Amino acid sequence: MRLVRAAWGDLKHHRLRNALSALTMFVGVLSLVLVSAASAVAGDLLLAKEEQANGRAITWQASVTLDAANPTSSATTLGERLDLLSGHHGEVVVTIGGEVAWSSDGRQGSLPLEWIHGDLTKIRRLPVVSGQLPSSEHRFPPLVVMNEQAAAETGCAVGCILRLREGVDSQSVSFTVAAIIADGSTEPYGYAPIAAMGLINNHETSATVMITTQQADIARVQRIVEDALIDAQLTATAEVMRMDTTEQVAGEIELLRSIFSAVSAVMLTIAALGILNVGLASVEERRRELVVRRAVGARKTDLFLLVMGSSILTGVIVAATAIVTALAVVYVVIPSLIPVTTGVAAPAFPWGACLVGLIAAVATSALGSCFPAWRASRLPVAHALRD
Image (cartoon, rainbow, N blue to C red; front, side, top):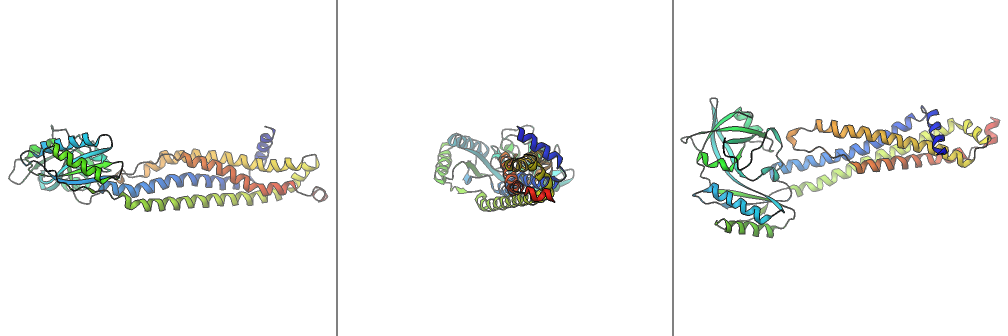
């Protein structure tokens, strides 16, 4: 306790002299924490693009043929059987693709549309720009979801009425735009609950099954799909293949983490060298003061611990300040800089990096001040007093 009080008094007395050392340490620790958060954001940014377009890891897909007499019912039955067979080990979505004609406020055109059974956001990363996604069981009032390109082409926003029909000569049905999403596509695209598909007499019989699993076991997924097709009384021929491309970016993400880790190491090394240089200059500047302490009875160990203690105390205080600053940056600044359309999640606070930063601050303070403290304890008393 006496040593801590002495170190604190020494730190206050020489606060200007230690400012550069503290600033160097602050930058080093703050950089370590922020670099860790930036690494998470950069890695998730690469992953988000793949998961938006091609599905989360690990996602499988298969093309199946539905009952031509009632494609909506057979797709729903197939989805339910897939849910049951896959249990709690994956997410299942069945989609029926097609193209519909649309009209709104005197404008018209065609729009590729997917009728969805299940929660597509569990298969693909689809950030909602505005509105709220409907469930696949929703039928009335009819709802439709569009990507940003479709919203721009139709001129519709959330709450807009869009009249859809299967063909030019078919009767149109009013759908309300429930949400605008970012799906990573550069083309206009729409999505609607499968329960509403029968309202516009859609006769598509080709469907796509998508399943996310925890393990890359294609044989198991193949059996699940085939058994579900048999249970739904559909043709049990479907070739399962890997849909997502997340494995392709795994190496890039690892490379990014290595680069960011190297940057952190460089920053901490610079901090340690800064402390060493400032410590040596401080000892030289305080040469006479330290010698006077020796002359009035201070031991070499006391001087060593005094110089070392003030440096370590500086490291702890600066590390705590850097961590508080990093908390504000990670929880306030970074989320505000991430566009919603990227699908990138705000990073969790890197508490592990904080612990490393605190340990590094103490370690670099100790190492950086070790030699200056040793020099302080070896100052020639008689020669210094004579000067």
